[in-house]
Length: 321
Ligand SMILES: Nc1nc2c(ncn2[C@@H]2O[C@H](COP(=O)(O)OP(=O)(O)OP(=O)(O)O)[C@@H](O)[C@H]2O)c(=O)[nH]1
Ligand SMILES: [Mg+2]
Ligand SMILES: [Zn+2]
Image (cartoon, rainbow, N blue to C red; front, side, top):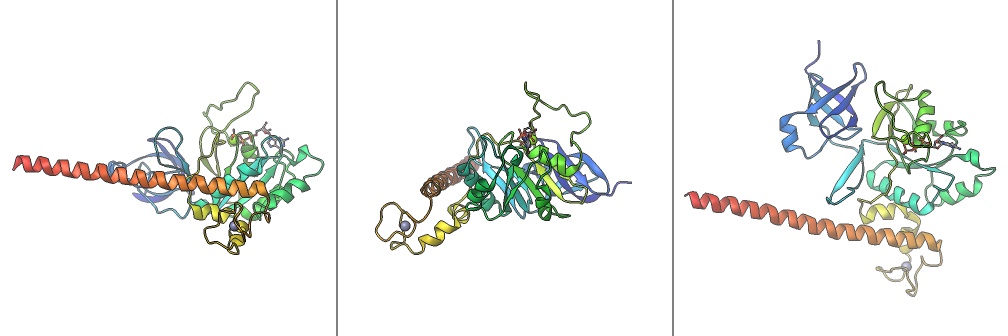
């Protein structure tokens, strides 16, 4: 018999249907309870822990330890949770046309904001005779860099210390970087579900179409994600600072507290760090500052709307009395 109330993990989340997993019971679909649907401040995302009744109805979403979020694409303003309760963000980049330190920095800000530990996975090392220069350059952006070939398996065991039982990693990066190839190698099989139609483009490439949590043979969790076409940040200045720690550290020695590191006398940053990296830091700081202003504006608009609604309700009550 089914147990009335259990804890399950969200494997994948569609608008109304959530695939959940309970280790001893396998996977099953569930829907939100009516109550949760109307009051949910947390909409379940891949990686969330939830309370489920009769293996059918999600009654509660547990508080998140970490969350990978980006700015919602399109016209609506807000955040989109890509994955929840992630310990390690595996930022996968191909050592081909995909490789771009400036884009890696955006991902590192996303990782800093999430609360998870970032690892940069330099994939496709089989394309180069030597990858030392790539490792060297990337190490200046992130202390944890692992060069691998998902195709040949070279270096993949270097990731194993992050893939321990109960830990959750998320694969993030451009489409074609090799995230799913790496995951299939870790799983030791292809993770296509029966009955699932896998989309392939004219080159016969398989592209991930939805976020999904998988369990490795050793009990580690890995979340595969579709490649992000553009990464719009939903982050604050502190997260940018965390991703550019050496710049923030040097900035303590600048003569002026509000130094912009742009020609001020006594600047300890400009000329002391790579100029492309400094430009990237300043650009990302501007971007999140702009986002903060939009968020403030949005919050005050929502506040106004709320008060309008309350006033309207009061007026209606007044009219009735
Ligand atoms: N040479 C080489 N090719 C690789 C390697 N890893 C993956 N590829 C190839 O890169 C292409 C894309 O791989 P995927 O694993 O589908 O990429 P992905 O990051 O999952 O892409 P999306 O699901 O679209 O986000 C495939 O043709 C792979 O065979 C590698 O280590 N070396
Ligand atoms: Mg994929
Ligand atoms: Zn300065």
